[in-house]
Image (cartoon, rainbow, N blue to C red; front, top):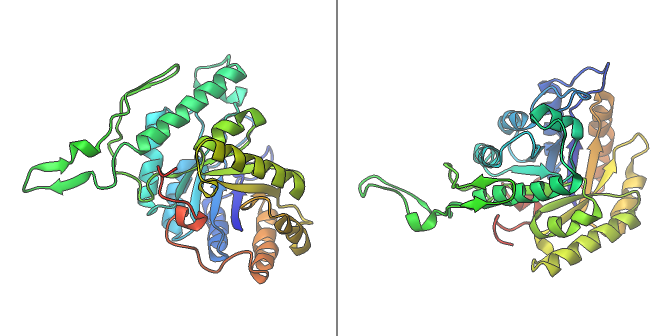
Length: 321
């Protein structure tokens, strides 16, 4: 079973923000326990206070860790698709192939007001825009073949033109020529994680995502949702193992070995995603109590599989659907 940790870094009113040292310490503990990846949430509206922009935080965490996968939320409203694709591709090179993007098709109306869209979008328009956006980002990530860059100084050739691909996207919401002015990701493409999905969005997510974080209230609900997503992936022409599904579980005080055993026994998803609040006591409880429980029952590994996030998750190189 794969294991992820979702860390909410946005503090509530009256609550002190986490420092970088506190966040890095928790991530290093998760790394030492063999957790596959940590997912950093982000927010750009006035009702939450994030001490760091999530992708900037990932760059710092990449230098403070060596093995664990690093995934950040990034809004499709706050960033242009070319800039976001370039940012995550750069992070993947900096981290030697440990980066992922957590994307959602849900809009936050308060966020839209910060980016010249005070009226927001209709839910249908936002969904179509987000789907187009995600397709552009993935297309840009695949703009260079693995061996496209030659660095042939003697022959005067920087790259093989046949292995560079213009995107030339002209859609309903965006027009993007491409390619990125950065080499292909060390793991093919950064890992695309999707979360907070409505059932109407399952087909799209099952077609394009590498990992889907499933919200469920019980192991039976999680199994039903994960089985459904796998079926949709196969219908879209993918192999079942090309999509990993992780059930999200709130890391509350009563969460312990027995509770975890109950979820692991369901065997409906590929693993669990433990959601932690931005609270030091919760982080300490996770590190001091839950992680040792996982280690004792061999649910958390003492070493990661391979060096890259796709290796940890048993995924093929990006672009190989």
